[in-house]
Length: 332
Image: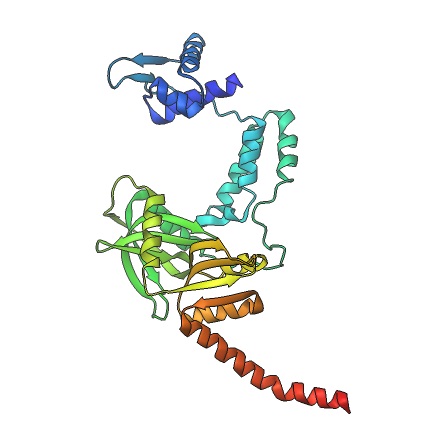
């Protein structure tokens, strides 16, 4: 609808400042001619939008212009209510704030749309606590006071002191320069640097945190998605074990839930899948593939095949006497 587009146009100018007609057209997914017509309509309605000519020109609002243009249509409200209905609402300790925001979203709707949006949102379920196999996700909780200190430090750009329990190490206090927070599959991470070196901390292992008054040593702007990809690549280049495995397609997700990463995947000749995956170490790989029983086969490395063979042999030997005894009793 044109009214929604006009609101979006004003919000874009208010949030981003000066934008050209081409930029606005790309954002709104319309033609530049439509943008120019919309600019004229806004001016006629009294919105103080003006044009600056020249190489760095464009359209902008007069400084300080504010107006209430945040009315939501039904689909926009539904999108927000649905996003807020998943278990991600607890990310970074913002669950109560999100619940409050959702109430405000509903309250901001026209009276006739409030019940409709709320009822519609009940028809969508995002990331339930169990899947079809009745497996509950691993939920990692961080104390509210600790998460608050971490979040404040990240947003304020201050140094952060954390009491961190690394794997197989006694907890230690560390002072870091926070970059950002990431949540993946209900696991939260703090991206930071320490003495200039990249560091990634699991939030569930932060026992306590304290925001410091000193400014953090970090760039003013950050592409967190790029930083996370780089950290992932760095993590995968560590001393992990690469495994080539064949798996029944019906157990693919079970396998993927245990691996560190998937490097390649392709169909095999018999309808199974052939995947190149990464595990933490040999012991991790052996445990994960043993859970899949006959629905998976490790092709490489040889050390993993040997480990699985030895485990199967041990189990078979342990139960062999019972099988023979049962067979003899049935004959008698």
